Image (cartoon, rainbow, N blue to C red):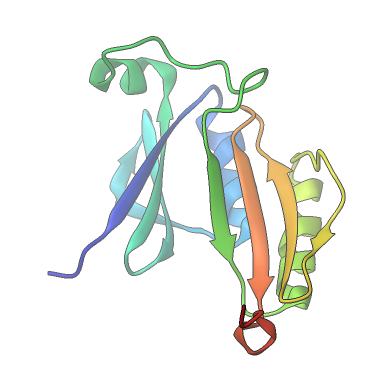
Length: 135
């Protein structure tokens, strides 16, 4: 079996969060979804589990972080072009996301940041490996 990653996020409004992640390009896997959690698929091996605070707390041994006022992690998603980054960003903003800063251009990589309703921070980017500095 291929290695997989499941990112579990505590969210206050599962349906609103599901619409936001769908706008970014995720799809829902109903086999692993119910009223307390939604499995959102990014690729064959990357999944984001949107869990109600109650369900998330049932797995946690520490209090749930307030990601609206504190950064818990930077999560990153790669896209195949700058146009795809901008398209996903516009859809995410229309779905209620917040862009806390301007796009950053590193020459070989263009990166934008979007936060969901709960303050989870996503860096979405396109990287052109042919422009990667050699030194």
